[in-house]
Image (cartoon, rainbow, N blue to C red; front, side, top):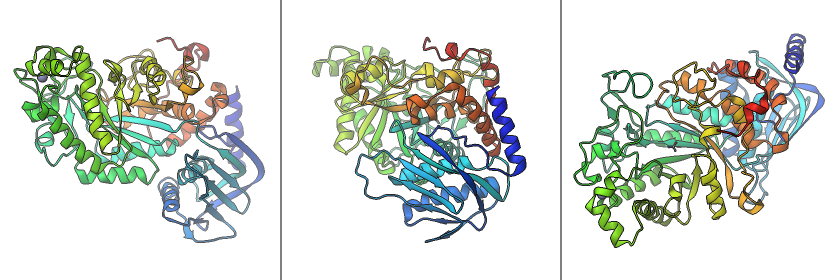
Length: 541
Ligand code: ACM
Ligand code: ZN
């Protein structure tokens, strides 16, 4: 009923030329409509005073051009018909990336505490724009005061299982920006493909980036397609993506998987595996594979350090993700070199060897001034001293790590794995699982098991998009929308502002934005709303 009322108001407002009601996702901390309106047209100028503000201005003008078909002039000052960016410079670190957005009849002023704050103000301005195409965009007079709840608001894209060309990666980054999120976790290596050019080891991409075939249908498949699938990013392309993200105040976190999910690397350089294992191949099916990096050879570590050296040159991120998940110990148990390492280092068992592996790489990466992130398996056998844990097998790993005073990013499969189905009876080929929108919306990243001090270690959360069953942009969009909009509110808005019933009418407006962007999205929520939200939000797996 409420959403019907909302739609009616919106339609009437559109017909008589009023600004539409304010409908922003993620919900800002405070929104006050002050009466009146402002009209953005081709005569409006955008005032940016330095290169960082230019990034926000450019994002806005590019958006206007691509969605509405006109653009704005730039100016150093303007008294009327302006959009003024006015970042404050005196805020001490660590700052909150807060902003205020003020719309009056003469113009728009966005005051970020920081440059990212100003950029987030632009994102809210974008959501004040009408969802119908026009060259005179009426927006309501409003004062918004806003700041993010969490500092890490991420989206992961797996380009190992399927390769996606640069324009798709950039589009994904644009979506991250439009949702006021700030980390792009780029899963670059896996058993099914090595996707990043490493100059010192050219076979990684000459051999490791292409598989001969892929299974057809759901695992184990009904056969294979006998069609090679491959692709990789050159270092120039990687730099282009990193800059594209930085222009949107997004940090790209590269993931180089170790010690497991390494078969594409082993296929490229067989000596990286335990002696007597193989033959290796770039896998054309899904799952967890026994062929992992040999932990007994120093040459393995030398190789990985060389790879990391090039990765560090390409990615300014404070974090390097080293994977660490799903590493079978089958080969290590049989390998004389791995067993000798266990003995020489006084390790308890193969779990201790995994811990040794990650800690050795952490020491190297810390020595270069960066920190590691690992999936929660890095807790087994002892955490590397400075590691940040991504809790994916539920929340337990995150709880454990936070209690050990380690930083944590929450990515639990039951709530934020966007490769899972959105309707109980799958409407497209997915890996399985059932993750309806309401469950994402109801996710609380701070587990109740943590006290206030421990909770400070929860930096935020991230959705993961594994791509075994995702091969193109429309399917990516279908899987992330509208769940990404729900997650953005989980990670940005104050906990007490989160309200499922008020989210749903705003989502109706968001659907129109997806249409405006020509983006695909799932309409599963229309069926889901018939289910009591309490039941949907339940934390049971
Ligand atoms: C994972 O989903 N294997 C991190
Ligand atoms: Zn070995």
